[in-house]
Length: 72
Length: 262
Image (cartoon, rainbow over all chains, first blue to last red):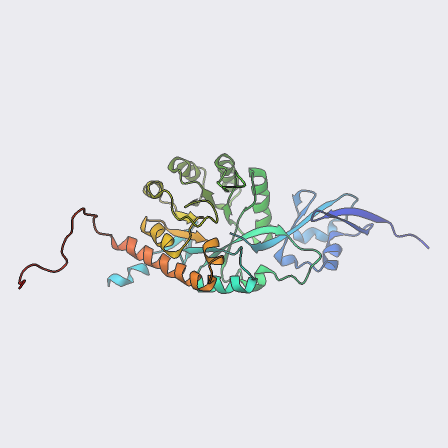
């Protein structure tokens, strides 16, 4: 049986293993992230939410997903 | 009629008209539902919000947007927790990306204990953000010279502190606030350090255009009642300011006529 290759990414500061050739759109769907309520930073750059499916994840990619919370 | 004058009294920030002169923070509440209720009772048209990481593991956690509708109440993203220009810019650019927010509250802190603003970094960030098309409301110290520099750098509102954030001490330097009031036509909003409703009235009577309150409401024994108290205090202070107070006199002046005295 062919072994599925996994890569290591850093998501909101925590390591996570995902299947090789996963795109960002798939990852966010799996995590059930409400896209309209968040912003995404990919390797320190803000990512256009319309282009998520074009972003294939590589080893050591850093992703930050942020939203609004209560604050003063 | 005289009483109608308050209706014509517009509160405009960056070209937008806001109904309430009270801006409230959404932090430190016991629950999201309590926060939403307090916001409603305060009558605020603007609430400040923070930008933080989404909780990836707990997807059931309530979202602020589910409690306070950003279509009905203007979200004012802040940079709370940022100690340099780089982090503040990163935070606000992300905030804009969430939903096109351009009106932002810049707050670059310089000291973890007193939470005073780091004004050099604040000034730098104001310049950059203004160039990028942001409408920047700036948390600052109560220094008229620095307020002038922020104005020149493109700030759309000056937000001096009354006292350290969350301290509840009330306005510590009324003179400086009055001087800033005299020198600027920009919206002047007291941000941070108020403790009770009367502090907001004083701010408004000094001629401020608005106040921003979080801790004094959220941490009051009865936050919902305090939200209402602040709402009334701000209206009252504004009305008092517009009405033109009497001169202060050293000696008394009888209110009843002396003529016809028995």
